Image (cartoon, rainbow, N blue to C red; front, side, top):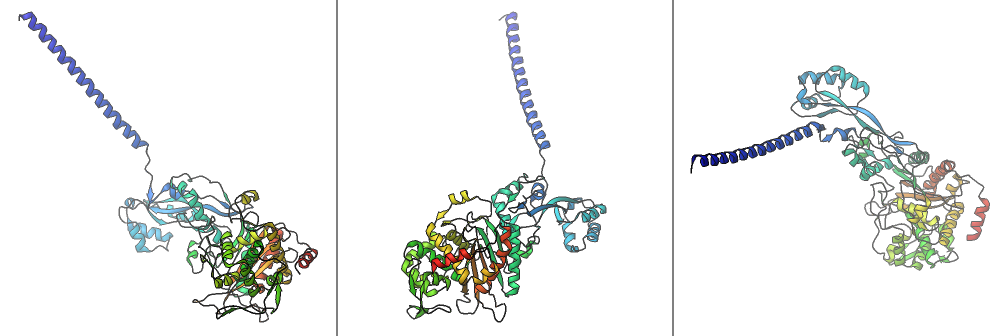
Length: 564
């Protein structure tokens, strides 16, 4: 190979090497550029991402989150948020712990010195010192000028009505989380989730409107507080429903608590007797027995039953309390609240059919409402002859007062069982979700019997106090079971009402636990106490509900004439 050829080969090799080098440099430049882009992108991401401060496991968004206002049916505030300052510390920024302890305790002397020193010591990020303070306290703390102390503005729940609607509203804990009542129900419905992601921060959530009428609620509670004093009862409760929509207008359980002081809810006996209490309700359950027997056709209003002798089951005998000792018509059995007559009516129906009616009206299942407080009823899966007999006058099984109020509403509203609710609902919606449990004709008969009993029977004391409001009612005086035994002399007195009876719009149940006679001349059965409380409540709330008192004598005369 000559010199010229060698030169050409050498130049070609060099050219290839140069091209390869250029490609390598280009690839490296691209890789480096991509690397720089990734790093810069990550830096930009980190720079734009705000790491939210966490104080003892909760983010600032959660701490500053709001809860929705709760209003009654007339727009009256029942629960609102109040913005309050809360003091926290960053121990790592505190220069002189002893100086800080002395200074803070000069404004907040109730803080334990050792506890505060421990809180302000160490390398913790953020810790609470004192929450829910006043603006004046905040100003005094800020004037101390201590590095590492600062404030957050959080929401404190305030209940303007205090104890009036305690068992309806429930309350919240210091972290503004619902722990009972509607407040807990709201969180279960999604507000807690909104708070957790900060969507309820610095904004007003849509108000939640309840069915409660605070005027009626206050009147009911006032009368029940008076009743505990007047009759020396250990507890009391009441609930009023719209018979056609199932809306709860008022619900009281005493003793109650102050939702503005959540710790009071932990005191003994502060449970919701209306939704979470199970009781043997006594003779108000005879409304169930009459509705079942009449609707089945096994018994008619024209029938008669022999109430001269007790009903016997082996060596056991069931008799009447101050019985008439004669043959009674069906309306008279209701008027005199005859156990003997009611048992015979139930026997005409049959124990299995009677138990089936319990299931039809939901006595064997919990009532689910917007309140989390509930207890399953205690009703046997089947009835023996004896169990059916005692159940017919309200013993041997237990349900909540709300079960009884719901059943009574069905008995007077035309026969439709409607689930109670604390949220507004119209009649059309209520009817669409209802279950027919008795016929219109049976419902009309139940209205007659209830008014009949109010005029000439055990409800007459109530009727005199609620004169003009055409109320129907039924008493129930149930012996309490103490240590597994009846006959202890302690009673649960219950009274159920519906009004106005020509077209019932409302039903109410009132209970008094271990009521005593008001005077030495007074009786101790429900008509003397729970009945009188019912009459006083209705006379107060009737005008609030738009019911005009009228002379009902002609109306009553027709009912009495039709049943005698």
